[in-house]
Length: 306
Image (cartoon, rainbow, N blue to C red; front, side, top):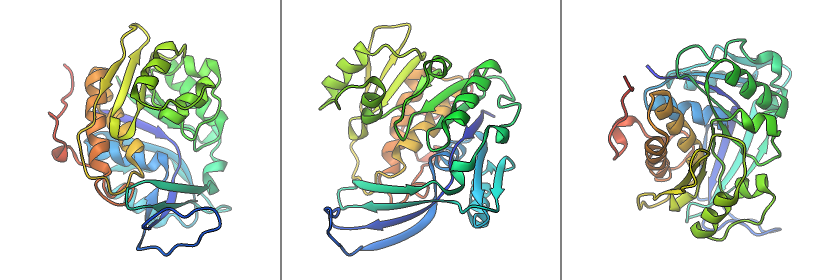
């Protein structure tokens, strides 16, 4: 079975659906309200577990997280390395989603901000081809050490640099696959946000990031991929779907990408599968609730390489 360690955040998500997102100073009435588990770390762990990987989550939660931990365990996520923090509350995300599936999110980090380097297992990589997946909703020193430790131990390292913030060059050089969206890529490179896929391709062609590959998620336009050993840019289009809620789509992408890479699948094929998984995720409400199982994907199931 493919093996993945996710080092990241756990949140309680409060999702409200509205006709249109409110303007500054405007009050609108919600049409629906859903509470569920979230946080990029937890979301990506669930996404990978639903596709069949053995997933361990390293995180911090508050004393109020018993139901969330039970829910993660029921998805097959190993939560033994999730440390309860009696002095803090679990992170909270307030999510507002409009009828077009667009959203705004405000996050209170809570216990996520207390995740420390001492919480990292000494062995992040436990088996051949293990993937270590990290995001930026936890402190920068933890992100950096997790990536460097995983590289030293021979793991496949994926960094989802969300939310956007500077990343040390030494840390980026230890990353196998960097997975930003367009805004995060522009932030890392210090450039303006690309207006379309062609501009995104041009930006990626000129990028001089030290990681081994970059996969840029483009929402409804799929993703583009560049490997350091090649000058080619590969565009992976997304299937046409009726989007209900885009929250968690990027996390689904990262979890599916990790699942495929942990099975020994080549990066372009892994990215294609991740695009299809993310496209499925936007057809339902809620981050984790709409994440697909392997049988629900309309692409060939991946199998472990011999």
